[in-house]
Amino acid sequence: MKDCRSRLVFLQWLSCKINMHYNLQKAYQNRENLLSIRLIFPLSWIHSSIFLTYLVLVLVVKNFLFFKDALTYIIFIESATLLVNWYVFCTFAVFLWLRLKMENSTKSLAKKVAQDMEADVYFKQLRNQLG
Image 1: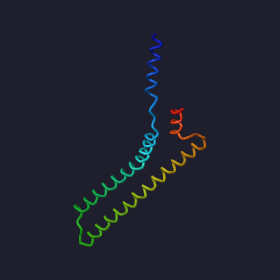
Image 2: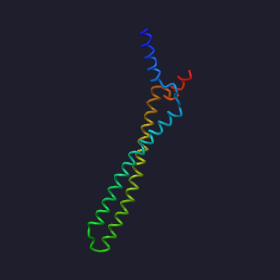
Image 3: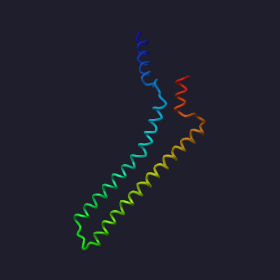
Image 4: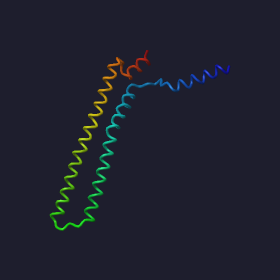
Protein backbone atom coordinates (compact mmCIF):
# COMPACT_ATOMS: atom_id res chain seq x y z
CA MET A 1 0.00 0.00 0.00
CA LYS A 2 2.82 2.38 0.87
CA ASP A 3 4.52 1.67 -2.46
CA CYS A 4 1.33 2.55 -4.36
CA ARG A 5 0.93 5.73 -2.36
CA SER A 6 4.49 6.87 -3.10
CA ARG A 7 3.97 6.16 -6.79
CA LEU A 8 0.75 8.16 -6.71
CA VAL A 9 2.52 11.10 -5.05
CA PHE A 10 5.30 10.90 -7.64
CA LEU A 11 2.80 10.84 -10.51
CA GLN A 12 0.95 13.83 -9.08
CA TRP A 13 4.24 15.70 -8.74
CA LEU A 14 5.19 14.76 -12.29
CA SER A 15 1.84 15.87 -13.70
CA CYS A 16 2.29 19.26 -12.03
CA LYS A 17 5.70 19.63 -13.66
CA ILE A 18 4.45 18.72 -17.15
CA ASN A 19 2.48 21.51 -18.73
CA MET A 20 -0.53 19.80 -20.27
CA HIS A 21 -2.08 23.07 -21.39
CA TYR A 22 0.56 24.18 -23.86
CA ASN A 23 -0.48 27.13 -25.98
CA LEU A 24 1.52 27.95 -29.10
CA GLN A 25 0.31 31.54 -29.23
CA LYS A 26 1.24 32.13 -25.58
CA ALA A 27 4.71 30.63 -26.06
CA TYR A 28 5.30 32.77 -29.15
CA GLN A 29 4.08 35.89 -27.33
CA ASN A 30 6.39 35.17 -24.38
CA ARG A 31 9.33 34.85 -26.77
CA GLU A 32 8.46 38.14 -28.48
CA ASN A 33 8.09 39.86 -25.10
CA LEU A 34 11.53 38.64 -24.09
CA LEU A 35 13.03 39.96 -27.32
CA SER A 36 11.33 43.32 -26.79
CA ILE A 37 12.65 43.57 -23.26
CA ARG A 38 16.15 42.72 -24.46
CA LEU A 39 15.88 45.59 -26.93
CA ILE A 40 14.14 48.25 -24.85
CA PHE A 41 15.83 47.80 -21.45
CA PRO A 42 19.37 48.78 -22.55
CA LEU A 43 17.96 51.62 -24.61
CA SER A 44 15.95 53.03 -21.71
CA TRP A 45 18.91 52.66 -19.34
CA ILE A 46 21.18 54.57 -21.73
CA HIS A 47 18.49 57.23 -22.24
CA SER A 48 17.98 57.74 -18.52
CA SER A 49 21.65 57.92 -17.64
CA ILE A 50 22.66 60.26 -20.46
CA PHE A 51 19.71 62.60 -20.15
CA LEU A 52 19.99 62.82 -16.36
CA THR A 53 23.69 63.65 -16.70
CA TYR A 54 22.88 66.29 -19.30
CA LEU A 55 20.20 67.92 -17.14
CA VAL A 56 22.42 68.02 -14.06
CA LEU A 57 25.39 69.45 -15.94
CA VAL A 58 23.35 72.15 -17.65
CA LEU A 59 21.74 73.10 -14.34
CA VAL A 60 25.10 73.31 -12.56
CA VAL A 61 26.77 75.29 -15.33
CA LYS A 62 23.87 77.73 -15.70
CA ASN A 63 23.62 78.43 -11.99
CA PHE A 64 27.23 78.35 -10.81
CA LEU A 65 29.27 79.68 -13.72
CA PHE A 66 29.47 83.36 -14.47
CA PHE A 67 29.38 84.27 -18.15
CA LYS A 68 31.35 87.41 -19.05
CA ASP A 69 29.10 88.47 -21.88
CA ALA A 70 25.98 87.46 -23.74
CA LEU A 71 27.96 85.82 -26.54
CA THR A 72 29.53 83.29 -24.18
CA TYR A 73 26.13 82.50 -22.70
CA ILE A 74 24.59 82.03 -26.17
CA ILE A 75 27.47 79.75 -27.18
CA PHE A 76 26.85 77.67 -24.06
CA ILE A 77 23.11 77.41 -24.75
CA GLU A 78 23.68 76.47 -28.40
CA SER A 79 26.26 73.86 -27.38
CA ALA A 80 23.80 72.38 -24.90
CA THR A 81 21.17 72.20 -27.65
CA LEU A 82 23.69 70.57 -29.97
CA LEU A 83 24.39 67.97 -27.28
CA VAL A 84 20.71 67.03 -27.27
CA ASN A 85 20.85 66.51 -31.03
CA TRP A 86 23.94 64.33 -30.69
CA TYR A 87 22.20 62.42 -27.92
CA VAL A 88 19.21 61.69 -30.17
CA PHE A 89 21.55 60.49 -32.91
CA CYS A 90 23.50 58.26 -30.50
CA THR A 91 20.30 56.77 -29.07
CA PHE A 92 19.09 55.95 -32.57
CA ALA A 93 22.48 54.40 -33.41
CA VAL A 94 22.36 52.26 -30.26
CA PHE A 95 18.82 51.17 -31.15
CA LEU A 96 19.94 50.10 -34.63
CA TRP A 97 22.98 48.30 -33.18
CA LEU A 98 20.85 46.39 -30.66
CA ARG A 99 18.35 45.48 -33.35
CA LEU A 100 21.12 44.24 -35.66
CA LYS A 101 22.65 42.27 -32.80
CA MET A 102 19.31 40.61 -32.05
CA GLU A 103 18.75 39.78 -35.73
CA ASN A 104 22.22 38.24 -35.97
CA SER A 105 21.64 36.14 -32.86
CA THR A 106 18.29 35.02 -34.25
CA LYS A 107 19.89 34.12 -37.59
CA SER A 108 22.70 32.18 -35.92
CA LEU A 109 20.16 30.32 -33.81
CA ALA A 110 18.13 29.52 -36.93
CA LYS A 111 21.25 28.23 -38.68
CA LYS A 112 22.09 26.05 -35.69
CA VAL A 113 18.61 24.57 -35.64
CA ALA A 114 18.72 24.00 -39.41
CA GLN A 115 22.09 22.29 -39.14
CA ASP A 116 20.81 19.92 -36.48
CA MET A 117 17.78 19.13 -38.68
CA GLU A 118 15.38 19.81 -35.83
CA ALA A 119 11.93 21.27 -36.09
CA ASP A 120 10.96 24.38 -34.24
CA VAL A 121 10.49 23.71 -30.53
CA TYR A 122 6.98 25.13 -30.44
CA PHE A 123 5.72 22.95 -33.29
CA LYS A 124 7.47 19.91 -31.87
CA GLN A 125 5.67 20.36 -28.56
CA LEU A 126 2.38 20.95 -30.34
CA ARG A 127 2.84 17.79 -32.39
CA ASN A 128 3.63 15.81 -29.22
CA GLN A 129 0.54 17.19 -27.55
CA LEU A 130 -1.72 16.35 -30.48
CA GLY A 131 -0.13 12.97 -31.20
